[in-house]
Length: 202
Image: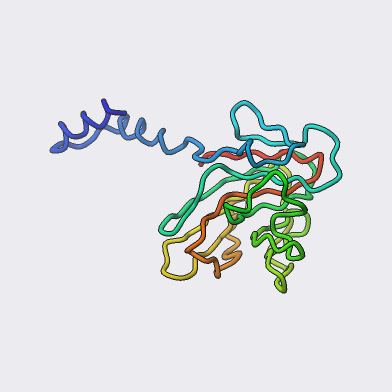
């Protein structure tokens, strides 16, 4: 990377070759987030690359998994998630970073446990706000197997941030636009035994 940087500085008066532009772009195709083994449910198995999760043993409770990347005020971050299994019982979204724990009970976006998470439910396409009194409302179609979801958290605002989603290339719009920018957040997933989820690059 230092070689590339030095070359660009020395050749700043000239056009940069396309092949060098391609090399630089490779640095932006690396997955920036990984599943966090310190906070994922005990029944979850993470592959060696840190990008795929699944339940290691039979488990009939909700398993929660969280990313390692912390998003804070002034940040914008996107994740691309693919559902590799046939199971549709998967919530995907964000949660307060200080709530991420392998001991979390229920879904990260359940309003009854008040976890303050925000999630999309793949089985029926609803959005779910984990704040008492909010609950579940219609949002989009269900999440198909092998289909990718791109989720973007934008905290570059003075008061409220927003969480937006795309599914299979379709823009689903804003999932939630009252996100407190003074808090810190991380990626969150809830699923039953049988689901297999992958974090992808662009």
